[in-house]
Length: 464
Ligand SMILES: *Cc1c(COP(=O)(O)O)cnc(C)c1O
Image (cartoon, rainbow, N blue to C red; front, side, top):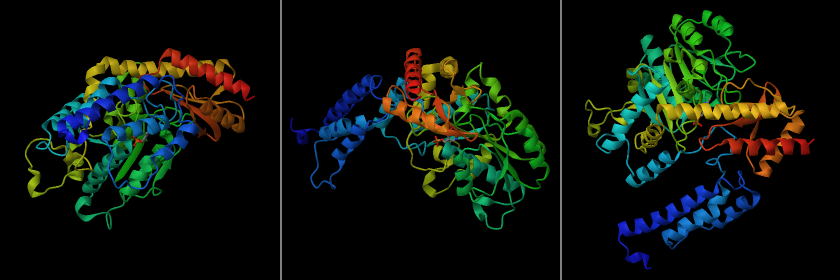
C-alpha cells in the first residue's frame, strides 16, 4: 500500500488500527509476563538510539518499533501482580475513554475550546465531592497528580490566610508578606514539601509534629505546637501514609486548627478513597471539615497516569489564586476549566474519571477499595503465618514486611524483583529495612495474590 496516497482520515485509520491491535495484544500478555522490565528488555532500548532521522518513516513502522522495542521495557503496572509504588492499573472503561479522548485531542482550557471537556469537569467534580462526602460548594480542578494538587491547594491556602492579614499575595508576592506558620507531620509526603518550596514557604521552614508508631500525626504534639502560634497558619495533614497506609486523626486535627483559625490541607493521594468504602470510612472520619484536599485518580481509581484532583472548600480562594484574565478569555458565568488550576492548555483529564465512575458506580468504587484492602490483609496473614514480621497495622492497602535483618530483607526484595512473578519495592520504616506491598490495581485477583505470596515465601526461604 502506498501510504502517501492516503488522505489524512485514511492514514489516521490505518495507524490507529495498528496501534489498537498492538495495544490489545500488550494487555493480553501482561498477566503472564515478567512483571519488571528484564535486563534484556532494557538493553533492547538501544534499538531507539539513532541520530535525529533526516527522512521520515511510515507511521505504522514507527508504531511497530515502539511496540517491539518499547513494550518489553515497560513495567507491568497495568497487570495484576505489581505491588511496588502506589500506582494502580487502568480499568477498561477509563482506558477506552482515554483512547477516544486522544482522538478528540481537545484542549480542556476553555468552554469555547471544548464544551464536552468543560461539561465533564463540572459533572465529575460534583460526583467526586459526593463520593468523598465533601461539601458540594467546594471548588476544584484537574491536574497532573497529587504533587500538583498539593501545590494548587496550598496556593489557595496561602491566598486565604494572607488575605485575612490584609495581604494580597497574587498581586504583591511573598516579599514583605506577614509570616505564615506551616505545620506538617513527621511523615509528610515529600511532594508537600516541594509544593511549599515552590510557593515561597520553604521546604524546611516548617514546624514538624512527631508521629506515632503507625506514622500518624500525634494530636498532643500538634496541640503544643498550635498553642505557641500567632498569626496565619496552615496545617498539612495526610490520609494514607505511603508506607503504612495509616491516616492522621483528621477530625481532631481539623477541630484543633479551627480554634486557632488555621487552614487544614489534606494530602489524600490514595487515602481519600477510603471514603468510598463503608468498611474503611472510619479511618478518615472528620475529613470533610478540612479546608482543602489533594488526591489522585491515577492511583486507586485506576485511570491512566497523569490524573490528580484538587478540591478546596472556599471555591473563591482557589479561583482567586489561579485565575488570569485576558481580552480573549471571554469571562462569562460558565466554569472555565483553566481558571481553577495552574495550567492553561491541557488535556481533558475528567473524561477518564467520568468513564471510571460511570462504569464502576459508587458501589463498584467501594468494592475496588475493599477488594484491594482484603488482598493486603491476605498478604499480611500469609507472611506472618510463615514467621515473617509485618511491621504495620494493615488498615488499608499497604503492607510492610521484614524478612529478618535489613541485609536479608534487601536480598529478598532483589530476588523477588528478579524472579518476575510479582514486583515489590523496598523502603525504610522506623529505622528498619522493609519490603512494601501496595495493592492498588483493579486487576489483582485472588489467584494473583496466592501466586505472589507463594513466590515471596519460596524466595524468602531460599535466601535464608
Ligand atoms: C503518590 C503520592 C503523592 C504524589 O502524587 P503524584 O500523583 O505522584 O503527584 C503525594 N502524596 C501521597 C501520600 C502519595 O501517595
